Length: 295
Length: 121
Length: 139
Image 1 (cartoon, one colour):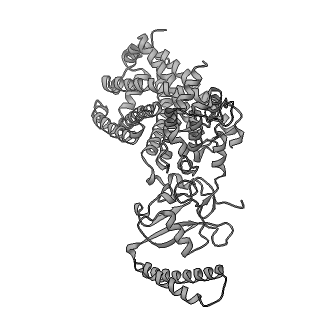
Image 2 (tube, chains in turn green, purple, cyan):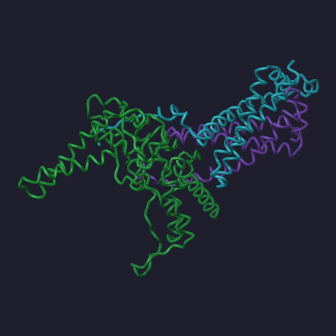
Image 3 (cartoon, chains in turn blue, red, orange):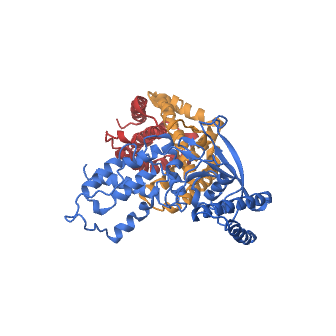
């Protein structure tokens, strides 16, 4: 509370100071902003100096950079960040980067669990940084890049293989027959929509693939996310029987659904609560039923 | 890698057989344990006792099916475990044939044993 | 992309403390499966002593098959191994039932509870069977 009042005061002071000079409005605003930032920075510094153990959290962050000598050998760096109610893992990382080490590298974009950029390995579990409350985690919070993917730098992993697997199941709507009028809506029944609803929530974050013991061992395994994508379209009645057969042929290869060992790891880590194991199991039964028809 | 899915090797049959044999084995393995450890104490087994049991057609048939299904379930399970760990290429093929031969030999030897135990043949 | 750092498989089993029910169930199922398939081969090898048994010695109970089995059963270590085998078989059966349910899509929400149940039941059955397995003549 006290900091807010101070801020208002300094703002008005800044206004008064810059007014007499003759400048363009843009320059004036920039100068005001710079000054404000300098003051805020000073405030932050005094704030940090006064940090006690009660309202701070220690982050232990995995650091690695092949291009910087001294960082080629992976290590953990500690960052002490002030805690505030509602703070997420991503907030804490952003704080650490903006205040302590601008070279700390991690992906993030929307900050609201939609873009799927910031899946991280936090305290031994795959979680979405922006969706995980710091208050839920034990101190110190250990933050690592996703396991089973190669680390490019710090918390950034190479997602290429994951995207390859996703694309292998042809993850786009592709109906056998399109309406004569190309602009006509292709409607889905409410029941069918309910069936695929959860599977449509995937944000391609890769948490499931990273948690999967089989995907770690068998590089060709499609993985939970890709199979869930296949489920989303194979179960969509608007696509038609031919397309469904093609989709089943993709997922019923040796490195498709059969590799799933129902360890439930993927289902447990999915930040969007998609019942991945359930979908994979349903596709297995669907594939078996489908083949029994031809025997 | 993702682009190289060309051979449509359908693993669904083995998956289904693994489950079907499982259902059979659950019953027979439990029965086998009960009979030879609780009803007949393992320490008291004799050749004549074994022969008497194995000379009933239904028991003989059950035990022989037990042998075949258990061999399939076990050997296929081992193969799956290795594929899950990323076994590929020529090593995978070698393992496939090796396990196939081992399984076959086990069934042959098991059949010889079961024939030696019975008066049916 | 220039270079990347592969952390290898250290993170897999080095992190066993963080494994959850489904993962443990898989590890136990796999382990008991390996034991059972190993036992199957050994079992047939031991039973092979029945091939070519002389009918006269079988009548007297002194044939190779009978003497091999009673010889093995007279060793205390074999009795303990048998209890171990029972534990392995019972767990594989119970967790196998659980996996069949999972395959049929039944009770997926309570898969962790059914794993704990199969562990407890295995323990109970094994404890209850110890007298039967260790009792009887040791010779």
